[in-house]
Length: 225
Ligand SMILES: O=C(CO)[C@@H](O)[C@H](O)COP(=O)(O)O
Ligand SMILES: [Fe+2]
Image (tube, rainbow, N blue to C red):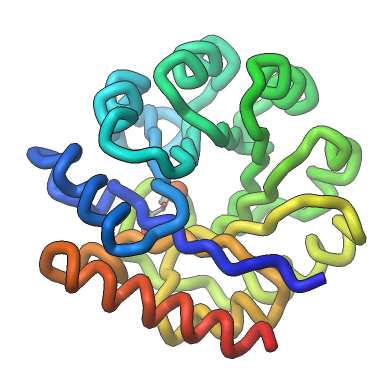
């Protein structure tokens, strides 16, 4: 089954002084999800924002708020993100130490659960938690910053994760360096949720964002067929 392509702009590349306006603009521009990059300055070498930002943007969109937690430990903060309005909560397999417990906690909060793999992490890290997953996020850059170049070995990992998933109802998300040029390779390998920060927000306002989202989506959909 071909899973529908979804585009999830990362607000890490938006204007932080205008979060509400920026979220409304990407919503109006036709994005599918809103990707929120949470960084703690410990698991990754950058600090961004916490549950308060999710709470602040929640009234500006009905679309899925996809929360990418690059924090360790994640467990003490899961309830805060759930209460703030996150729909999907993704933890890193490397953030440990109890991945299965983190996923059980997210599901018990009634949220969709994702697990993320850094570029250097083997796909077997998800093998025994597949029954608790709604999504696998394969990092195509080392986490911490937007605007980095796509790491080519990601393509091979997408294929391996797709094979591991089999016919389970699990999305594969790719995050980092997604552009209209990399999107076809990503989609052809079997991923269907594409996060894009700089490639979307380099545009001006709703029309600029729409053009960038459409270009990525069209390139991916064409390659899926
Ligand atoms: O999680 C991360 C980075 O750690 C990403 O979500 C980036 O924010 C994507 O930015 P671009 O590579 O698309 O500019
Ligand atoms: Fe991300």
